[in-house]
Length: 277
Ligand SMILES: [Ca+2]
Image (cartoon, rainbow, N blue to C red):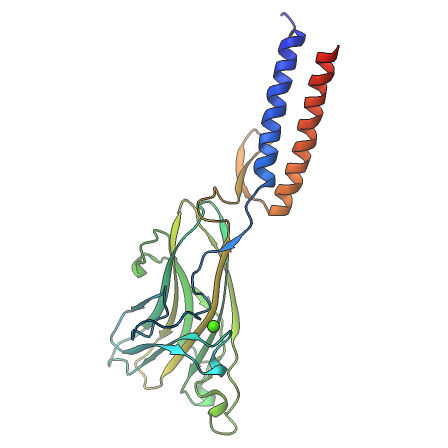
């Protein structure tokens, strides 16, 4: 078999160099994460009388008195001057698992992982000795079709929260402890979705009299900018030749980019040396 001429060898090296530099630039410019939630701190002034913060929508499965309110009680606000308050009481006789929720549909990058974080308070009128018996719960869930359809949520993630006295520091001694927010975290893998809906819900399981309130503040969902290809890059497996999708941090991508730039430059200088001969 005829060996490669110097010229065709040089041509191959040029192509290799160009490919490597392009790959390096692509990796090194891996976009910085962004928060895709709008008005997650609930600070935009309430525009109507629905009680639901701008850019958020309400959901309930009914059969109870439910209400959404602009929370301005400083003790029940995590940041700034506002939070989202939701309440349930007067459940219809025999009804179980009544739900109140807010949701927001956002654009996301597919094949990416987003970090969800928010803060919540769950507080009831239940007597101290009867709290934290599991009558109330909070959850978050995702409609991966981005249609804002509650029925599309397949998994509800239970938020472990302490059930506090609804009246906080204004309660009757000795049940007059100030309210406190608890941090909630989770991850959302977008799969092939470029648009998803995030639901945050409160649940009252039984048709008992006590009122329950849920406060939510500072919701963030952080990941690759919508429209980007996401943070999953293809990587070759040398042993099997298989290709897998893995999450690559920006730091790793930049390091990989630097390595590829060095390899590309080495290949390019080899071309120059070959041509100089
Ligand atoms: Ca706030």
